[in-house]
Structure formats: C-alpha cells, structure tokens
Length: 226
Ligand SMILES: [Zn+2]
Image (tube, helix red, strand yellow):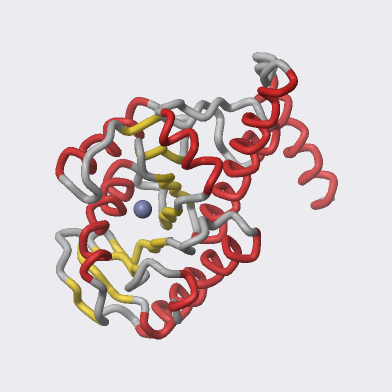
C-alpha cells in the first residue's frame, strides 16, 4: 500500500502544476490537459479527465504503468494516454512528473513537424539545452507513439520535452511544478520564435551560452547562501 500521507502531498503537488499552467494562460481553448506524478517504479497519480476545470486533488487516480487503475476512476479517453506518460517515466529515471497540453504555439510547431529550437535564454534556466524533437505521428497511446516518445528522449538527452506530431506537447520534470514551469517557458519560446519570423527570424545562442547561464545561476545561488 502507498502511504496515504505521502499520496496526499503528491495530489496537492500535481494540482499545483495544473493550476500553474491554467494561471499562466498557456492552455488551448478546450483546456485540454493530462498530468501525472510518479508514485513508485510502476505507478503514477494521473488526472482522471482531460479538462483542467474538472480536476480535483481527491479524484486523481492511481494507475499502474500497464494501465490498470488501482484507485479512482478515469475517463475512456484518459485510458488512451497512459502509455504516453509511462513512456516518459521509462525513458527518464529522473523524471517524477509529466504534463501534456495542446498549448497553441507549441502545437503550431507540432502541426508543422518543426522541432522547437533552443535559443531563448529562459529555456537554459529550466534545464532545456537542445531543440525539442518531433515524435512522428501515431494515435495517442499507441505502441508506435509510445515507442517514438522513448526513442526521441533517448536521442535528445538535453531535451525534457517532445512535440507529438499533429497533436501537442509532452514535458517531463523532477516535480509537477518544475515540468509545468518548463512547459510555460517552452510556450513562450514557441510564441517568440513565430513572432521573430516577422523580423527576419530568430538567431541562435552563442555556443558558450549554456555554460555561461549555469555559472551565473551557480554564482547567484552561492551569493544568496553566503
Ligand atoms: Zn492531447
């Protein structure tokens, strides 16, 4: 059995991630979202329906990686996306939360099958150090889709996210709020990339940018600690 106390904390953490995304205004018009946090090596806490406005901490479901629902009830469409979340947990041991939305600017890149370049400084600060790759289209949760997610994450260790072709975005992180914050910054980056086209196109960061940003953050954290 899972300790109910720690599960209660995880329920709150998952809802904080969802609330952060809704508050940031990065949702599509439908408010479509699914999000999960890792409970242990074979289980996740998962949003039971795909609409942000319907989600409550107490109705989040405990679901095994093979799709078996241990606690709570999930909608039929939610049962289709379990494999999408499992694929990220299996690909990345350090990932403890996964969020998926149809955020408009990121979804534009997904529709165009264009990887989102990594040239917005804020991405580096949130652990994204390379372009967000495209996973070839396949029906959500299908074997081909989950395999594609795993392969894309393995090929791109500097990306914590993938764009699902003709669908949306999938982001992993060490916590629900961390994954949600990265998704917000990715949506900002996608919007800025599209606006920059009117100005001749976005330019790449210098090669040393990642190292420079890390050093700057390290120095600032050290100064605060001191
Ligand atoms: Zn979706």
